[in-house]
Image (cartoon, rainbow, N blue to C red; front, side, top):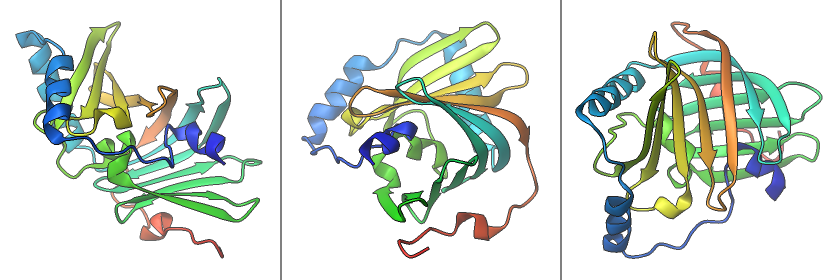
Length: 210
């Protein structure tokens, strides 16, 4: 089960909290140096995320061991996400109500994690600001793509989230979650749609008896 949770860069092991001042010092030391042009891109990325509300897409997920899986993803910002894996995979992942809930339908097991204790939770924030309690630790602009790596300033040891945008137009096309153990999981989005609405039932959290 632990290996399967790693497929999305999530971990059931919660990292012990250290004093806030120590984490802030770490974040300050690891904050990337940005040029004025870079700062402009960061502002545009922040605005693009803020303007992103509902997305439906096909996805390919690359696990730390290189294994690839596919499925359909729904993002409903803020706070909601659904990853429905293609058969024969029994996996389902839903984020809602401040939690990420992972279900293995084959064995009827459900695992829940606090959304704010995973790097992926940053993507679903209602008002993501790339400053303050979020630290930008990496930035690249190359080959028509923009890469921005983020950590929570107070808890950087819990992992990082790298957002990958196409430059023209500025659209989120992938992300990489690095978990607390330093393992990377990449998700690429394809055939994106932006429907006006999606059914609330898509984000109903699974239960052990489902």
